[in-house]
Image (tube, rainbow, N blue to C red; front, top):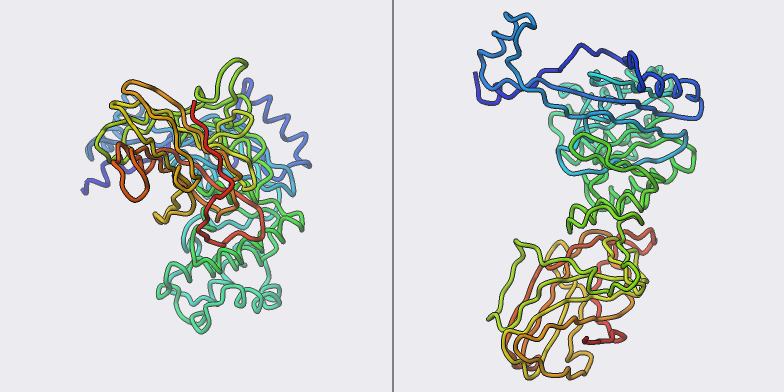
Length: 459
């Protein structure tokens, strides 16, 4: 038996179908959900999914022979005690790190998997795109798979005939519609699968990372179609690693961590909390994810330590110990939409005397392209010399422009000298991470910018 087979999970318990909670507090919650089901498209109460993990091949046989008298497996709960509701017409995003249980949750909602405990209800016709090509027969042509998917959803061939032209036009795979889907590229798979899911008139649409697949034009087309479905009152449950997509598309968000529900609420608040926790390990703040300074606490107390694995260069004549992206009201920011007045702040300690301090920062996108930035030379300022052992906080204050949605890094540095000739004491290429999530129609424009209005202060 292969090593993969050793860890292949088996389902804990004997839950099948949409199984009710048998007793106790969860049972009361389930009865309450059923009474108000007309308000909701999706309801879960105490939902859990457990697998058996066997370390050795023989343990499977021993477990069968033991007949429950002894346990030869370890339990792995992919999902545990998850309760939430999705109202009809609502769009809800599911976020969390890889392995947090997001895809398992979607499969339970769709009925693809049976829960181990708890209750899950979906009220209405469900169309789901859970994984690449799921539900497709690789030997069938694209056209045949369209009719197959429709039949699974309960549609008559005549209904599919009336919609086939729209499905084919949206998928835009040309003559490949008449070819077996086993010949398709991954992009063609998802084009067809998404086209089928959205054109078969579902009441509930469930999507697992579909917006991350395909070229930019197709992603934009998917986004516009989802906007149409939302406007038409369809219910959408969406898993995405893109904070921008969740904030733009979703009314609410559910954050899963280690298979458990960590937080649920308005999409922007939950996403900000998630980014603050995953990026800077700052924990979840009461105000969302934008940490605010208590009364009497300065902005420097909102800075976060430089990541342990940061890329750092320089001769060590100064050390940058903490960095932050702050709002004017002394709040730490991890999610921006553009147009905000912000401060890039860094705390540093001089290890030697610095006669001509040269401070700089840059914003770098996911491709490594420097998008914007400023420094003392651009601002035509000459900061006061630093003595060895002196600690200061440097702030660059400016209006943050609207960049393309996505993840960005702050690079910060300190040197001695001028732009043309200086000694680099320290440069941190990835000191702070944040996300741009704008709903503006200008999105998609990648630009390089200077910041002539940027002001520098040193304290």
